[in-house]
Image (cartoon, rainbow over all chains, first blue to last red; front, side):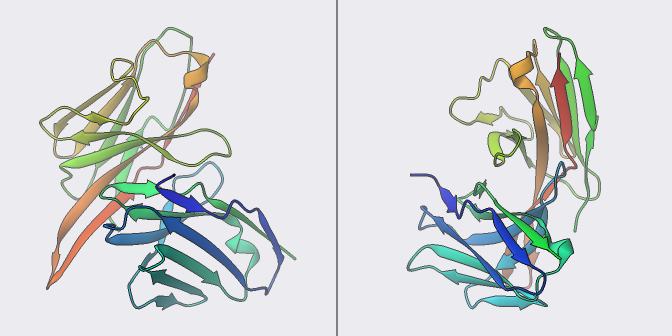
Amino acid sequence: RKEVEQDPGPFNVPEGATVAFNCTYSNSASQSFFWYRQDCRKEPKLLMSVYSSGNEDGRFTAQLNRASQYISLLIRDSKLSDSATYLCAVNAPDLRFGAGTRLTVKP
Amino acid sequence: GAVVSQHPSWVICKSGTSVKIECRSLDFQATTMFWYRQFPKQSLMLMATSNEGSKATYEQGVEKDKFLINHASLTLSTLTVTSAHPEDSSFYICSARRTGTSGSYLYNEQFFGPGTRLTVL
């Protein structure tokens, strides 16, 4: 089983849509969880950390379910500029990435 | 966030040559750095963990004699792809770990360099 598994996508959504990405991890001892955004031919950039109680940053909401070893990212009111690949990452203990989910937001 | 630089940003070389890529943490010290590789439309794959002052730890399937890693200082790690072949063409990305405490919160963050695109002809 892969250490971090992610929805393969791709997701093609219209502007203004709400989209959710899911990710599961295998190491129950993992302590830190993140969502990264990667644009084409660029390095990943940290989008947000994921905290136990769930956290929100503007249109982005991240949630963690330790019992199910599952994290999610919700993007509301999606913009064209949200088009990218979204990677979940888990410290286990070093950062391991999911395969990424490609999002395309269309006008 | 902290700044990590990588050099060169792209390189084209002939098959059989060796290529060195540098990764620097510019505004913090990093005892641990990581090297990843990403093929087109695939995820980042961890190749090795680079530890300052000691040998790197390689992931399964990564040849340590082909991908030489040196982490001689707290701000610099290098990856040398020896005798590169076309199948080594990829996007190589380093990251540097920053740890510390903020009040009672223990943080453990990784910051990525901008990547090096290697093309072997």
